[in-house]
Length: 534
Image 1: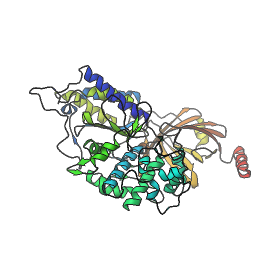
Image 2: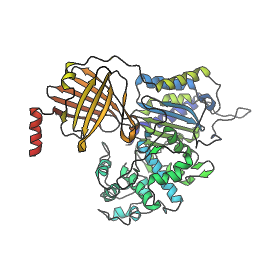
Image 3: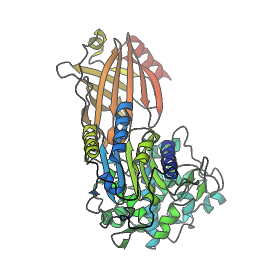
Image 4: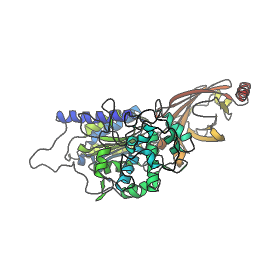
C-alpha cells in the first residue's frame, strides 16, 4: 500500500521543524566556547543492542514527548510501538498494549526497502552486473508468457523503481498481489503478467515487482533472500530474530510480511544514515545508499520514489523512509541525525508529528529535567499495561438462543464459511469460532470485560480479542492480530434465524458486509439446494 499517512507525517514533521528553527525555538550552533554538538553519530555500534539516553542529553525535551503519550491515550491512536533514536541513542522506546516489548512485528512493505538493499549488495558482490540487466535474462530456464518487445526491454531498474510496465492492479487494494498469492508459482505468475505499457515510463506500485527482485536474488546467489540476508546483512547488524514467509518455491516475499522487532528495523535506518557502513565494514556500497534514497521517479504531491525507498522532494530538509500499511515506518532525517520507527494497526502518523517536532529543541545537550523524564517513563510504562477490567453485562436472551449454534455464511470476499459463539459468564469470556476455506476453523478467545484475551495466531504470534453485546441482538467482536497488523471489528446482528455480518479492517480491505443463516434452518437448506443446482 502507498502509506500516504506516513508521507504526510514526514512532511509535517520536517516542515514544523523548519518553522521552529526560523522562529528561534530550536537552537542552532554558533561560534564561541559552547558545549560540543550532540548532532554526531554515537561512538559505539548497536550490533548487540541500542544504548539509551535521556532525551535532554540528545537535545530533546521530555515534557513535549509526554504530550504525545497524552494524545495517543486520549484519542485511542492504534499505534503499537514508537522508537525515537537521535545520534545513535534511544531516547524513547514505547510499546502499546496489546503489543509487547521484544516481539517481532510484520513490517509490511518496509520489506521492500530490505529487498532493495540486498539487490545493492548482490551487485557489489558481482552476482548481478547492474541495474540495466534485462529481467528475463535472470530466468533463462523459465518459459515466459506474453513476451513482446516491451517485456524484453524491462530491466532490473524498472522493477526497483516500480516502472516495470507490467499489468498490475493495486487500487482499491492490491488485487494482482492476491492473485499472485493464489497461484501455484508466484515468480512465474509475475513473469507471465501482460505488459500494460513500455517499461521505465509510468510508476505503478506493484508488489509483484518486488517479489521478482526476491526471485532474482535466489537465481543469482543460489540462496533465497532470507539466507542471503542472514549472511550479508542481518548477521553483521546483529539481527537474529525474524520471520520471513516464502512462496511455494521457497522465494521469500520480496514485497512484504518480513517480521522483526522495532529495534532491528531501526538498524536498517542507522545503516543508511551511516552511508552503508557498519562498525568499520562497508555492508552496502555508499553509492547504492545514495542512489536508493534519491529521486528516481517523480510522483504527485511532491512525492518521489527511489530504489524501493520513498523520497519526498521539496524545499524541506532531506529525508527518506521505508513504509508499510498500518503505518509501519522507518524514517531517516540525516540533518537531524534522527531515526523514527513506528509499528501500528492503522493510524495516521500526522497525529504524533507536532509533539515529536516540538521535542527537538537543540543540537546540544539540554539541562536535565528529572521530573519531566520521570513522567515520560511513567507514560511509557503505562502504555504497556492492560486496562482495568470493566463490568460484564448480563447476557441478553439472544445470547442464550444463539450460543453454540453454527451460522452458515453467504458467499463473501473474505471466504468466511461459518461462525459460532459460546459464552463463559463466570470467566467473562466468549469463544468466537470462524470456519474458513478447506474445512479449517479459527478460534478466538474474547474478553467480555474490555480486557483482551489471547489466542495463537499466524506464525505463532498472539491474537488479541475482546467483545460485547451492544444491544440485545448485536454482538461486536474486536480481533486484533497485533504483530500481524490486521485489526478487525466484526459486528454480528441476529434476527430470527439470520445473521448479518459487517467486517471492518482499516489497514487493508475496509468494510465488507454479508449475511448468513442458522445451520439446518429451512432457508439455509433452500439456499444450499440453490447453490448445488447452480
